[in-house]
Image (cartoon, rainbow, N blue to C red; front, side):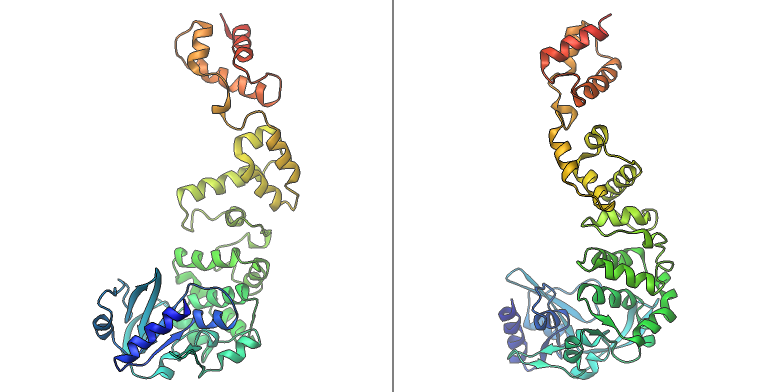
Length: 364
């Protein structure tokens, strides 16, 4: 991946322009972390980049960037620029192309994201980001209040990087976050969820949640139950505790899973009926939320004689024939009954046993 990226730099520079790897890729490379985040900045304009890479694509939200695909890797190439004006404390609406790497780096968020690499693999670090990496520190480039007022999402990005990298926020950043936290109300719930998901799925999620609470961001994010969250490997379990599906965007499948987790969480004890209805995954997630081992739940689930109604060894036609009755709503009542009987081992899941039970209990 690195070799492919460096070759792109060589191609751009062979046309007389400057080009560098920048941001997350260089940061993670220095931290020996795997990453797919590869950004390039250059003195070439999008028009000039299109001439160099005819197969490149200009994104819809064009901020002076083109996208190049090489070996199934996505490279976003951005022209050196100044961001002159922002809209809604989030998006730059006026930019100016420049021919100066240092000035381009000044517009970025944190020093650790402003470290560059040239085509020879040499590190270019005008803003001492490498020193902050070594000290495990998140520091804004320039005044923190200005950075957060320009783009409020940087507040959550600061917490996210502190969480995922297990770094510390500077005192200046923490104070600035508290002063500017109300700006989070201006962000879309979709953008907020993107950052929160990364915090909640981090191996340091406990740290991230603690930071959000300590910085008093729970109210601004409408996460009023944040202090009740117990870390599990299930992202949806965390969102289930937070109970904000009416605010934050979720797919229909995610909402269904969250609802199931919430329903099971209300039961004091697991039993066969709950396990059967909600399945092993949801039941195990709830046990993790309670700080319990999932071993017993797994053993009980595996011991169930059936795990789904389709496992029952008779069909509706079999029952109608045995009872000599036409199709009707009574079939659901019968299936509900034999399902429970089988589930609690009071009835063996064999066709002849089930039909005998039906004729004894339901033949008129």
